[in-house]
Amino acid sequence: MPRMPSLFISHGSPMLAFEDGPARRFLLGLAPLLPEPRAILVISAHFETGLPTVTTNPAPDTIHDFYGFPQALYRLRYPAPGAPELGQRIADLLSSQGFETATDPDRGFDHGAWVPMILINPHADIPVIQLSITPQHDAAWHYRLGEALRPLRDEGVMILATGSITHNLRDLTRTSPDAPPAAWASAFTEWIDEKVEARAIDDLLHYRERAPNAAHAHPTEDHILPFFVALGAGGEGEPTARLHHSFTYGALGMDAYAFGALPG
Image (cartoon, rainbow, N blue to C red):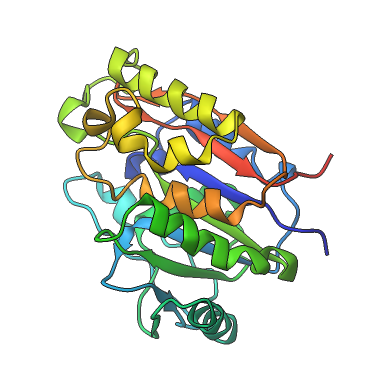
């Protein structure tokens, strides 16, 4: 089985499940670009705990963790199986690397997991596990968490981190999904891409002090922390690529990155 890539995907609004746009079309066409994994480990901005927690639910529910959206969104389900034994293996791997870790046998899929997955793999026939972020820790800590997960890529496990490359909900142009991007958002996303391309890891880990408009792009860090897990899980010297670049509602950057080689 080939080495799996580590991916970061911006999941945007839950309406991504229905609302046409460049990011949705990208996700609908993503699967053919990827090797087929035996399981997918999702690190979502919407699963926050006090220490890294891995799901071990064999049949996770679909969590509709949002309010005020059309009823059709609440009827969607993503019935992918879990993988309890693999979940325990991941918890043990993290523990062996010095991370105090927990498991959760009851948690289902939050929308940071199931919204992109329903587009990437609508058949829901690949097991999905989730790992939480820990927002009291910084980018460098989450990068190290990603490094600890790196061996999974040689075990057929695809690492899929989901958040948002920019995430300032106060600046959304809510009535216009195709609104042009704000200048602050464009400047931030281009800085990130420049540093990824240069493999300037120290700059990326200190983005809060060095990137333009960092605090504006991320008033809180929850939606950027998964990016650092994906970055850490990508090995040094491996190829990296920005797979997608667009904006929605003028302020949500929808960029996607691959860390590690893709087929072809």
